[in-house]
Length: 183
Image (cartoon, rainbow, N blue to C red; front, top):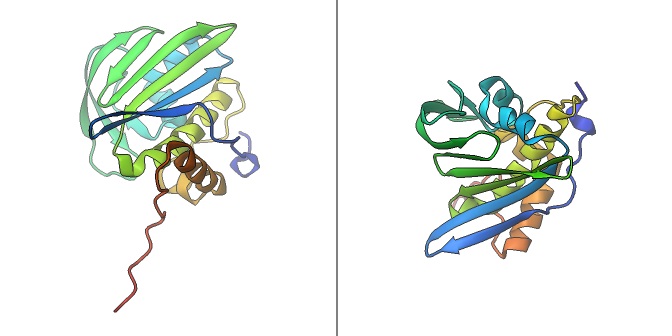
């Protein structure tokens, strides 16, 4: 495994937001050097998810049905319905939709994630790092999962959070939250 301290994420890119009234969706696109079938396995197999995703699943996400997702830093699993699982093409569950498209010798991966506006730049920074970790895992040079509080302590995450906030025209939330001064 490559040392995660040697990893530095590139600049904020490949993300946009969509607004529908009060609903915000983060859209991230990443081109990976791996086949759609290999990427699909990483998106659906619980063992692979534990290596790169910000959650763990109690079962495979490759078929329609119910699974429990435990997000890092959250003690209680959330029952989640996989509503669409078209192998190596489309995966939908909870508030996320993944599309895989063959692109050259690899895959164009697109994620739509409905997210609270207040956390949209944080989500973009987190998913950016997750996608980097995923790419390295699939390339055979894993660096280990960087998610949740560990990601937010990472200097690259702080930079990405600010860059995405500027791109989206939102205020980057202070993280960790600053305590209010005593009056």
